Image 1 (cartoon, rainbow, N blue to C red):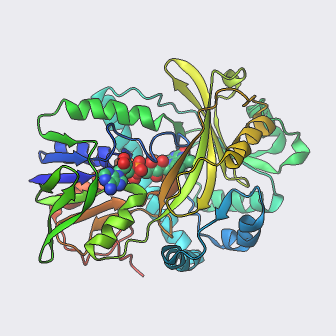
Image 2: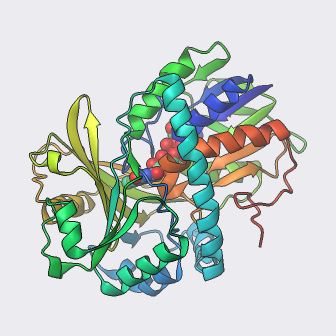
Image 3: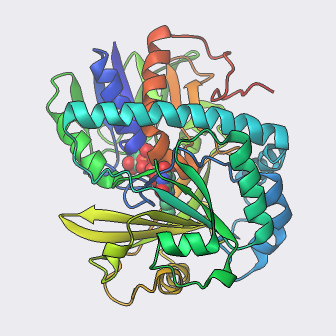
Amino acid sequence: MKICVLGAGVIGLTTAWCLAEAGHDVIIIDRHASTAKEASAANGAQLSYAFVAPLASPATLKKLPSLLLSRDSPMRIRARLDPALIAWGALFLLACRPAAVRETMSAQLALAALSRSELTRLTQSLHLSFGLRTAGKLVIHRSARDFKAACRSVAATGEEPGQQILSAAECLALVPALQFDAAQFAGGIFTASEQVGDCAAFCAALTVRLRQRSNVAWLLDTSIFGPVRCGDKLVAVHTGKGQVAADHFVLCMGAASAAFARACGFYLPIYPLKGYSITLTRPPDARVLRHSITDMERKLVFAPLARDGRSAVRIAGIADLERNDMTLDGRRIDILRRAAAELLGLDAAGDIAPWCGLRPATPDSRPIIGWSPLDGLFINSGHGMLGWTLACGSARLTADMIERNRPASETGAFALRRAA
Ligand SMILES: Cc1cc2nc3c(=O)[nH]c(=O)nc-3n(C[C@H](O)[C@H](O)[C@H](O)COP(=O)(O)OP(=O)(O)OC[C@H]3O[C@@H](n4cnc5c(N)ncnc54)[C@H](O)[C@@H]3O)c2cc1C
């Protein structure tokens, strides 16, 4: 079959690889001249297999007013009158129900496990080099109440091998670079099996392998404008370089997927959640940051990276709801700079490679993987905060489901129409 992959971020590239491996003729279209130029370019670098908690939860609901009103809050809304945000927000509130959260957690953990084994398989079989390392992750909790809840959650799900609950003093012994004293935070959860890796470097390495395949064609530097339908079937897409026809299409356009779905005549609950990162190359204290760290309360991640043979620290976070605005707001970058100094004593005054990207977020944080209501269009999008972690498993599911060719009415944990 000829299958057209719409979008060449980490989701589109891994999808293209699995489809090409299955023997299909694949064509990849993207508006940029090279791959992974949007949300996959400089993300938090954490492969977060054990921490898949959704943003929507009873705890988030309680904190929502303070989260949205404080000036330095990691979340901000600047698109209050946007009808798309209102529709998305209503679904977000529903997704805060404890039963919905439990369902999301179990679906995401299974997808994360599949992703981990698929990433290992691809890395080894294709000899991909992108700084993959089992660095372990420490999630620190400032408030005693949140820490207790996290400990309960570890006890409830806690089969992750090597996961430990640590007191504040034990956290400081594990990460001596932490600038706290033990009285300033409650404790942490350390998961030795968690990994880090540079998503952009992975995409670049996978692009090289895709270019070596005779059954993969490219249309880069090419904008996708909309669908070409024949009745209820998608038969081609309009692009800046003319119409591109195929037997099937896979929608991997990240935060722009919702607009393409709208042009196809159906609602896709994906909204852009803008985040920021900075990358400190060769920081003086990089050698002491062996593990990645998540500051749960401030929703910030710190990951040790290897870039061009040099050590680096990536600091990422923030979740702003402001439509598709891609302005790099210096005040949001300052939050990351300050966090680098306050948490790890890192000097973020020099070259910090400031970046922002739009996470394609669904209300319940689960990606949408399944056939769309439009015949011929499959969706693999909406991976939100965990697209790097979940990419390889999502691509595997996509290739398998396209092979089975089930109808759009199917339900399941990742279907557009989730089971109630
Ligand atoms: C600050 C931040 C930190 C993050 N940290 C982590 C982390 O630590 N771990 C983790 O697992 N995930 C993390 N993520 C999430 C992860 O980066 C995303 O979920 C993932 O990159 C989404 O990939 P994608 O391929 O769906 O989207 P994208 O990478 O945005 O790709 C979509 C592609 O579609 C193309 N496209 C869109 N519209 C058109 C059009 N009209 N015509 C042609 N092409 C088009 C774009 O050019 C783009 O290349 C983070 C994200 C951010 C923003």
